[in-house]
Length: 254
Ligand SMILES: NC(=O)c1ccc[n+]([C@@H]2O[C@H](COP(=O)([O-])OP(=O)(O)OC[C@H]3O[C@@H](n4cnc5c(N)ncnc54)[C@H](O)[C@@H]3O)[C@@H](O)[C@H]2O)c1
Image (tube, rainbow, N blue to C red; front, top):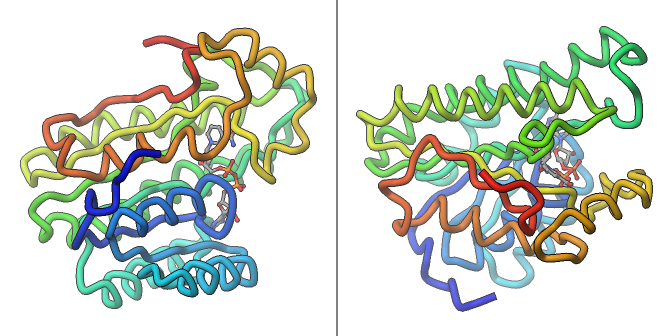
């Protein structure tokens, strides 16, 4: 990647779901771009290891426990992170669960549907609310919501997840208007199928479907997505808000 080492100098950013996968790639790239990063996740041990590894590299990161299904946990995580960072300029709503993969609409259980909505939609809403006062105080706050390209092309056998990410896109647009007067930008990044621990279960056929449909016909990896997140948090994008940026090698084109 090109040199971004000063792009986010002095910015204070919270990244949810950053123990592993895309969230860890974002936290790493954001810290490498000069920001101080609060990393939060439900996987305590994995989070501790990831934070320690980044701190050993001299990056300014700290870790906080978080359960996005629990409103009290969201509140205490945001409060602790904002106190530690001394304010907040950026929030990356990355934590999410998929859980509904590989089954048709009629095969989904109500409890599973509710859990996906609780974490991905209600959790994103509540975490955003918990961070809004600090983001307003920043004067140039930025919220980056991790959506997915699945609602953009109508991915099958993943309905609860697809519905939740469609909701994230809707929230992104409404919040952009609500928080525009406070100079907070709100944008969504919609990655295509990206190779991480969480997507190892995805059948080879689905990977091939993505690869064949891309303009850039290769596997998507976390580093393909980090640039879009850095851009959305940076001073380069202060007049861009309410947008959905598909980062998927041209699989879907808005
Ligand atoms: N990998 C892909 O193909 C892909 C494609 C499009 C969008 N996304 C989105 O990117 C984001 C990261 O996904 P990923 O692929 O790295 O998967 P992942 O499962 O590795 O990452 C999600 C992170 O959120 C954490 N998390 C889950 N439930 C939580 C909870 N209740 N409270 C706090 N943290 C919780 C997990 O522990 C994990 O660290 C998600 O929003 C996902 O929907 C991923």
